[in-house]
Amino acid sequence: LTDIARGATTVNNQLAIYDPVTGEWSFKILSTQITKGSQAAIAIRATDTLNNISDWVRVSVKVSDPNPTTLIISTPLEGSQVSIYGFTFSGTATDNDSVSEVRVTVYDEGRKLQTVKWQLISYDSSTKIWSLPLNSTHVTAGFVARLGVRAKDRLGIWSDWRYVRVNAIDKIAPLVTITSPLANSAVLKTGFTFQGTATDPSQVQAVRVSIGDLTTYTWHVTDQPATYNLTTQAWSYAVPTQYLVSGHRLYLRVRAQDKMGNWSSWITIQVTVG
Image 1 (cartoon, one colour):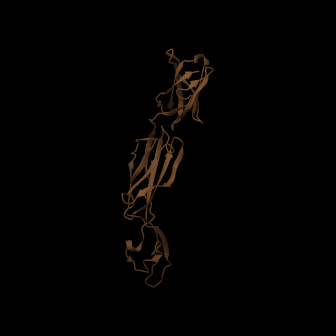
Image 2 (cartoon, rainbow, N blue to C red):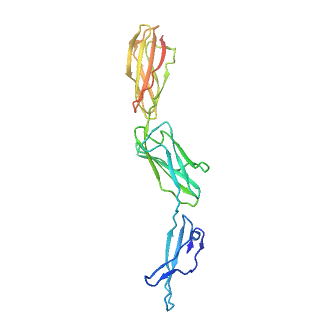
Image 3 (cartoon, helix red, strand yellow):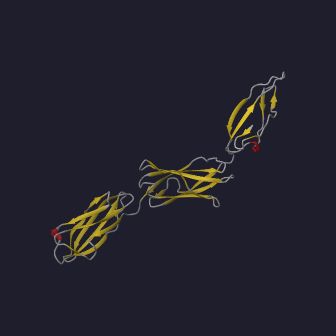
């Protein structure tokens, strides 16, 4: 018997037990003669009563670990909801031979893409806790993501995969800004563009504007769609000249909605027509 891990012969031409009635032979191999997670090369031959010796019969075997790594996923739970703005994939890994590494994969069904590929992650040998922070770069709102983890002990023996499927959600509204005109500035009577940006990891699907005249207490535009560019994430609305009267104070507001249906609050400014 040769223990491949040690490169040593641990059993050398020893006599096996043989039953002449059944023709069966057996030999007990001890744990001290093999190494968990390694290969062992076994060879056997027999001699008859006339002292004729057979050729060696050889076989190579993989030595398993009777106490493999115990791998547990603590968070998130199977089928639970996770925020695309950030959550932690975590759990514990314990092994009598100590854990040497933990690796993770993430498959995003929204993009049909493996967003984390066999990544080596943080593992605390004192607490036995492994963890990996995830966010919208790894999962897509409104879709399922499959998270997988496995661990290896110091002998090089890998645990089985552990998986959890989660539902990625987005409950946060888009971030909206106004870039022009500036608050309390003067705008041209001949017309101007009300504009800014709207961003959201789940993608913006609508931007709406309202324009009121504070001098006459009149709404000129109410919750009307603005132009939105998905690439630049900029929105704009050309304010018609018929709403612009010199000296009048205007109330401008804007809000945006993402693909998950979340509306932002109204963002407002006031300007004066020059």
